[in-house]
Amino acid sequence: MNRKYRKTVIAGNWKMNKTPSETKEFMTQLKAILPKGRWCDVALCVPAVCIPAAVRAMRETRVGIGAENCNANASGAYTGEIATNMLVDAGCKYVIIGHSERRAMGETDADVNAKVLAALNAGLTPIMCCGESLEQRQSGITTEWITMQIKLGLAGVPEDKIRKVIIAYEPIWAIGTGKTATAEQAQEIHAYIRTILREKFGAAADETPILYGGSCKPSNAPELFAKEDVDGGLIGGAALKAADFLAIGKGFPQK
Image 1 (cartoon, one colour):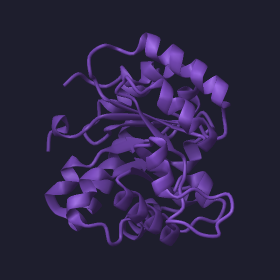
Image 2 (image 1 turned 135 degrees about the vertical axis):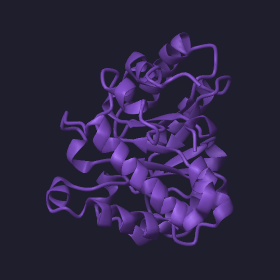
Image 3 (image 1 turned 90 degrees about the horizontal axis):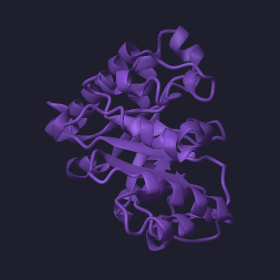
Image 4 (image 1 turned 45 degrees about the vertical axis):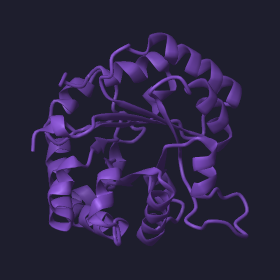
């Protein structure tokens, strides 16, 4: 399927950076340089305390605000956790689920699946992450590992909901290291992920955006985004500077 029928997305992941005051300043800078035309979907997933400031600042724009995590439960004795309905009420449209840093803290594929289902039920767009470590890549089990993450993470998701899911492939060995998968390596895995999705969801998989999330920056974005199955990026460090973040978005081929 031609990529013009899928959304192209740049999603920022601020991780544990910026205060609410700094968020307001960033959004002011971002609004000043946002292109007037719609060239791709833009999401910024920010720390929980920054969500209200981000939502207020971007209310008149097409930039969607998201969270970096959620809890699968609707309410209860889960100190420090945030439910999906809380995120929706705060103005969120997206939520990152299953990031490698969360998985390193003990999050399992079952946890990821529960959060994906909760996010969809609440009306949020989950950005579900998958990816392999350097050891797994060198051991030759990349495809097996990603197959497991995709199938378990999306268990129970109905076919009519997969269009509301975004997948982010993040080679763990390229996150924060300055290393980047080549455009060919990224395309190979993205195409493989789409094959898994087609087996599970049929033609709907061709409308599911798959983002690249491993040290994507303005210098390598055009080459990565030129590939047929690379539909955008989940951006870490480069999302902390408004100019760099938008420069990455400009790497998309024009539809």
